[in-house]
Image (cartoon, rainbow, N blue to C red; front, side):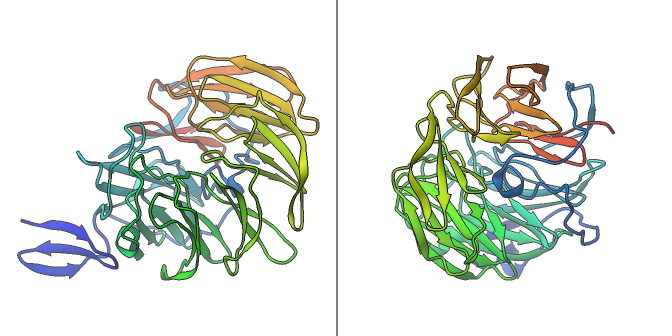
Length: 419
């Protein structure tokens, strides 16, 4: 009997009592190294987690049979989001009775052709809440390849052609890692480093890995508490810093060294992302609160707070001078980003797990049943341009690239827009 298993540093094929290193597990791979393009959506919520694209035009109306450029059936579940770099869409999934079969896939962004499909066996625990699964972390990618983390602690880097560059079992490297409800904080890339957030009830840390070989460049200890926030990067005159929030507040880490530069312990949150704007930061606390941000961190009391800007699982969106939220209780709310004044608060059908995204003067809010409310972002009032349904469970945040929306439902990856 042939088995595929994974150890801490090697993917191994067990066959007839022999152990052979196997760099490519399944599928065909082909294609050229592609340059990073302006339209890329390379991580969770796109450029630096903003959720905003410069693409235009973008689609307004669609259904499962209308205005779909292509669609692809997926080999397993996932709440991770698709990402797009160059002409490739990358996505993760997990399958099997225990959710321990892990998948990393690459599709042609224009035609939907499956370029390659890599599979591996989970090495860490696969217990989680029924709403999530092992494919919860959104990958990150650049022109050199794609980096995927699974909630089992399995982490790998593949070249654009699908060949394995390196692999690590974080559950083997750090055996106390544990989160019985599931992990989901996503990877980011900065200055040749892969930033790995690993907050859990066991050994918790924020680490920077060398993208060439996966070795630790630095590792900063974090509180042993469950947290799902994805880091964001803040430019700084003394070198970029990584902002990571959690149950004990917001911390800024030096990208080069991992040292804590400053902290703001009055702002604790565990799922949504903060938003950066010049010398201000919007934090999902007390609804949403806006703070002034100086060289040494947050300055004083909030500039404004608006408790109506409720989030839940989704992150707030800053677009065209307005803050938008889509809540787990079914409200879509907007406020003026300068004053915090509420512009509208509308109850719609369904709860939201996916974060709103925007581009081309439109805001897209996907609820958990696959219905998308397309808002006109050129006005201060609640104006729906369209209400579209894919009629499938949708928990993942869409990506925007190539004048299309790339939407991951429970079973399907859709490219929405003109063929």
